[in-house]
Length: 495
Image (cartoon, rainbow, N blue to C red; front, side, top):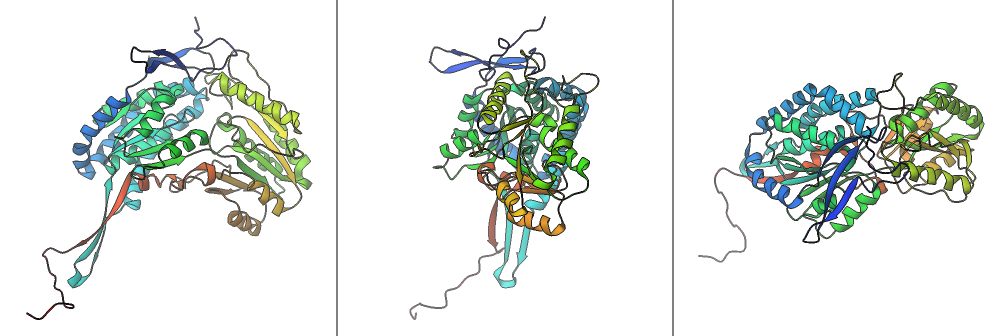
């Protein structure tokens, strides 16, 4: 018998059942459910942030004192444990996120690959340097860990994003308290077990189940020396405001985007349409790097939109284990589905023209059809991240207008140009405000050896991926001599 976490069609309350203990402090069960079926995957109590931070503080000196090579060996053992649990972890990711199983397998592979990437990045970004200066001794540059790091991650990538934060923090010598999204607690729990089975102490890496209350308490905790956060702009801004008066605590914000994909002159409309559909609807549009806005030249608009619509109508929407395999699964929960439905109706009632309607495919579960809406005639377009399979179209006449539309956002995570000449791409690259800018590639295409981050509401100039190492250790400059040697030659009285 299938158990639902909530009555069909009703928004969830952050997957929590809240109760109040005798002290009046809110606590409760954390319940993770399958979006595709409503079946409970994981149930447990919210973690105690104070206890977890205290344990990490006690464990940190010994962990930081380990030789760097030992820490690298331990994170490589973690990668081997994830390989052993590949199928189990992929299955949990598919169940908890609703993403197709083939995509969940790709995420596990990405999580494993991030370990060696983090090893290389730490050696590159935080390399020790020494500059000899004869009688002046030498100048040295070395790096120190911060101490105890909070890692707070979203439901959209429950294995690769946490691994991409936790492993660099461990390599640098930090302990980690990890608070995953409550919707993907089971995946996070198995990931934490892989760290522990690899020989990394359960006090060095701790997973704290919880909802927003635990996340806020962890980020603001006095015992936390740095926060690595990936999630929505709304939550990231609240963390930034709360910690603004505490410059001693490092804060790294990897937030979302209202990302544009611009299609310009190209004879390969079918390929351009495929790039648009991949950018907008892969992972059910639930990537921070998904395309939210299609900006297209007016002379191409009818033909391109026709190709995009035709391809979109062929996409299979289904459960993660369906056969044939779907391209898209459900969104994360009914609350997200309800919010996207309301957003589509708002756009439609304020000047938008439906090209492909957003349809709720299941009253009980959050399956949505991919939707396309032309918002060119809207007087005011909401500058928000619509986190799901909803693509807005804007038609423009010239390239300068396309760049202006791409920049018409407070966000700045990623942007892509499809088609156009090398000169137009150079103009696009130099004038568009974003941390990732691609040409004839999807918006989410990203090199393993590059940083990932944005500007504006998309981040705080501390990119992740290859540059995460920068946030996990701070540089210490030293001037050094093996014996004291000094004298004062000016401004002394005669003896």
